[in-house]
Every structure is written in structure tokens, then in C-alpha cells.
Amino acid sequence: MEVERATYENVKNAQLELEFDHINELIKQKETIAEDTRRNYFDLLAMSLLGQDVNHNFTFYYQNNVYNLGSLPVFIRKMAYFEDTEDKKQEVVLKGKKTRVPIEELWKALRENLYVPFSMAQTLAMKYSAEVRKTDTKGFEFKPKGSE
Image (tube, rainbow, N blue to C red; front, side):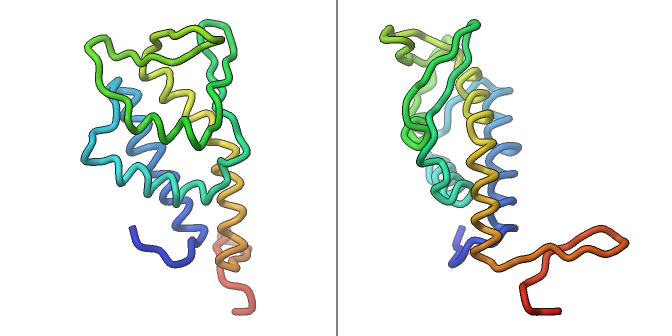
């Protein structure tokens, strides 16, 4: 994925690909990221977040409890290196205790933790690409500022 300046469309498409083509599939399959696709995962994170994940924590709701697993940008990158296990669980520290949790629960938590940074990245991309919303009776489309 080669992009010089992220447009709104680039960011939106990367977000859709990350969520629907990858995270949702990892949830369904109860899988970790294959070594040969890690690079794509990191590329999609970079394009879909534009650094807007930096001030967020990874919140994990599990068994009627809420856990803070630390920095969102750190934890989502650590997830790329989870290794597949027979029981499809990963070891994480919950309130100071190592606990094995189903990998699909971590992927679901990731998806939920990305909603706010995704929105922030879309807003930032809109500014980067100088797009404005144009409305008419047929709906709306984006077009560059000053092209009216």
C-alpha cells in the first residue's frame, strides 16, 4: 500500500478492510495473524489510524469485569505476534494475574477499541486531503475545496 498523503477514501477503505476482511474473520476463525500477513496488518493499522490511537488504552470487557490492558497502540501491535494455541486462548495479565482468554474475545475487544480512533483518523484525513462535503438532491459526494 503506497500512499503519499492519506485521503479520506484511503483511510475509510483501510478501516473497512481491517475490520471486515481481517478482524471479523479472525473472530470467526478464532485465529491469530499468520506470519506472512503481519506486514499487511501493520500497513492497515497505520493507514486506518493515522496515529490517532496513541492516547487511548485497550479496554477489555471479560466475564462481567473491565480491564485496562495498557496502551492501545502497543497492545494491538503485540496482537500481531500472538502464536496459535491448541485451545485458541492467549495469556494476558488481568489485574496482576496471568489469565488465558479466548483469542476471539481479544479480537472483539480490538474492534470495539478502534471505533473512536477510526473516527478521529477519518476527521484528520479529511483535513489532509482538503475534502469538503457537497450536497445535492441525489445525496452527497466529496470534492476538493475550491473546485466549485
